[in-house]
Image (tube, rainbow, N blue to C red):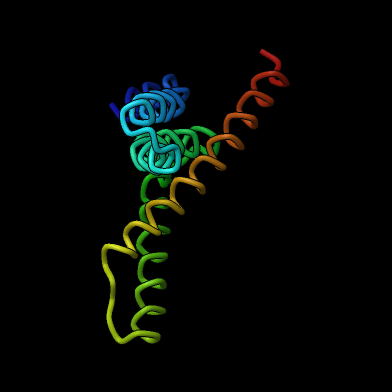
Length: 129
């Protein structure tokens, strides 16, 4: 069953780009604020980048650790940011920390998505059947 799920996520690895474009164009036309439209599009497409990057990681490295690794890095990043804010201000601004971790996750997963897609395409091109 897990192989079936892995194959589905690997097969739809192009999906995270479409929600970004759709939300950016739709929300941008509605609000007329480009910066806010980009932020909302980033927030929405992160939901799609996380499972796709996890599936690509699992496929490339033949493991089952992809989603757990991403979540672990997110939790550690949130903990480090919370500790930094607590030492600096004496309070933990949870909403700000979650927003920063979510946006950093977008950039990290988008970068990994591009790298993994390139590696998989090169692997497919140079594999002899």
